[in-house]
Length: 413
Image (cartoon, rainbow, N blue to C red; front, top):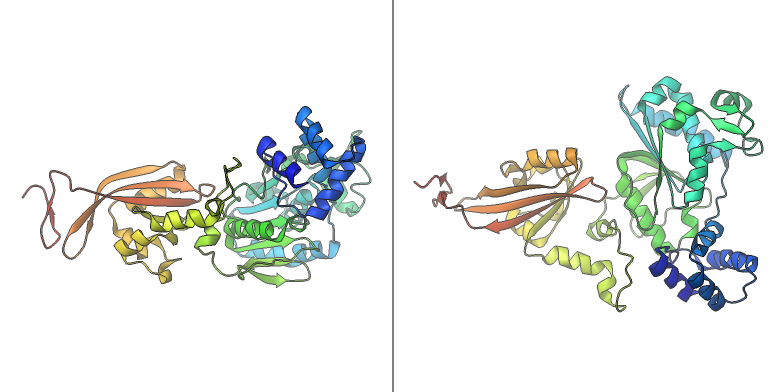
């Protein structure tokens, strides 16, 4: 079984190693029985000689058990408590961002859209709702985009909502065309890909439970990063947030609703980086995230990470020494730090944040009580382009600059 999983991961880019083994074994055996294959070794040989088999296997493994308003009491809580809270926290024309992760064939996506349309009105919903729906299963995504459902699929939708939001055709019931166009559907792997960002409501129901505990933690860290500070996480009835640190605070345990708790620490931020699927030459501690943490912390170049709200979230030892940073400065705004006084830095940061393109500043002077240090500064968007990595390399003073003991910079005088 493990050999099969390694083969799929490194030969097909299909990483199932994070899934719980009993669930995987059951699904693998279903597919193997369909092919009348009795052993994992024989199935490995079959995979190696049939290039499309990995797709058929994925369709068997990724069970898309979903329905409209599944666990109705939780959806009533969403409609009566959570959505009104989100709307009340916004200005009248302010956008509302929703991410449905592991959206399967779309029933829960359209359930959420219906509730927002009921709360805002369809016209306001069309103007304000920014909805992202993602899944790893391309066939399921195609079904979700198509938004066409059989009569049995819509049987749990109240009659008035069915009439208001669906059109009955010979092909089936088709969801409201204008509202559907407001949804962005995207291929996204919760284990490998960076999270969506600035999310007010993140819906991921009955997907986490298929992953091992360590993978669940990684996914939850990414969810934390993707949510706004006052955003909500809505999980499935069989799921709980179980993390080493209380990075989420329960709002309603019965309905599995959470908000952000503690801020992410350095090691957790490093887990946001998608890892290469290239197979390592040897299994060693260097493949662990600790190697990236060590490289960051001990780099001779000062490095800092600033989020889209201009707040410091990471700084290495060199940066701490240069700018007098401590752990208490994490979460502080860029403007409130000594670093923020570097000429042109804040303006360049805003440009990178807006355009999502790297920027470089050369020969930027940093005045201290007794001297001036010059830096070349690079600002690079990372973590789904909503965090900027700032690197400062010390350089020699420009030829036309000299520095007095008082720290005054003059042009050759």
